[in-house]
Image 1 (tube, rainbow, N blue to C red):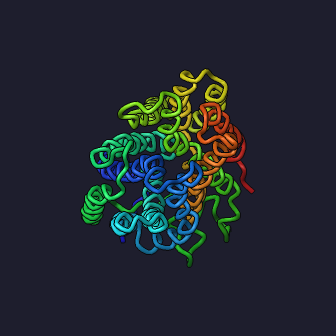
Image 2: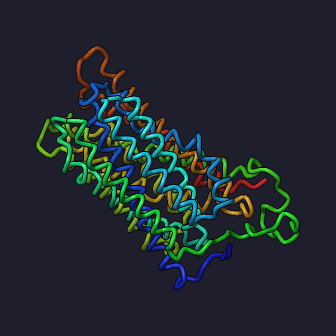
Image 3: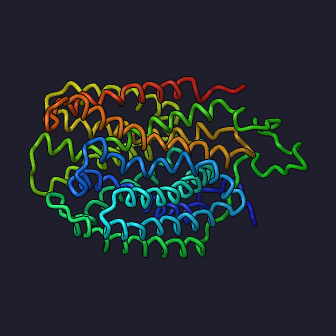
Length: 417
């Protein structure tokens, strides 16, 4: 296997375009799950808290398969691991068919979990690939470009499912055809990636051979365990909180819109506000990092903005608070692009293992949104339906998440011992 260190800009443009389509597919899958959260409530007669198990089923796969994904990537390389990930995701989509025909919510959750395993391997492959394919100080800019592709799919996914599913009168059997189509697309993309011109890349110090450790000039020299990199472990916790607060607006915005504006036709159109906020932030990152803002400074500023946005969302008037979700999404945009390069810095030969640890942090998407749903249920008490105030109050859960990410930006990523 030919290994290549970070490439020059002219050399990594084509690989980035290919990986951009992969990020689009990742976003499409997450967008579908977010769209299904409110839809499945009526199909399976679920409470608010139970409906968020849809998100939990997907993201719990990250903590279970996160560490093994490093073993897979080490042996197959980034490109072949991406191919395998697409095939697993296609299998997950096919499993939706028997779950729909039998109206089985547990089987539906199993299908989501299998798809989550594929997503785990895909995330563990593409994120470090984008981070190390070029200069490390511009990694957040490249990740922002990938984020634009990813979040465009968030917006397209609900429109795609909306062709087959009526949110007001959900028929679970209607999901069979779209998931067959998505499974076919994933299979074709896997084959395409196998033949795509994606060079294998390595981080600084990662090419060190075990029988010649003296060639390792990185901070990782002499380290024997991934646990000896505290900045990585703190970064994984930051990823945990970030993913939770990124997924929460997407998973809750349709419910929040319905409780705020009533059962308007095409209520799913409000999902676009989350995408607009994120894409606006990514564009900001593309044009400012690293020329105007460093990755560290960007993460600091957007963490503070996240706290301010949440306070507006919680305390603002009803209609104004709803649009505060757009500002929350804007605040979330540059966190993922900035956390990855800061957490992977100086890992050397531990880069692939470190990436798998960061991917495990994505399980935050299985924890924060369900907790939010339970908080909504708890705050409404014995009332049949939740009020706008119940939803607003539950958004308090995002405040400690932003505070920890701010700590990582200011201090946590610097720890070396």
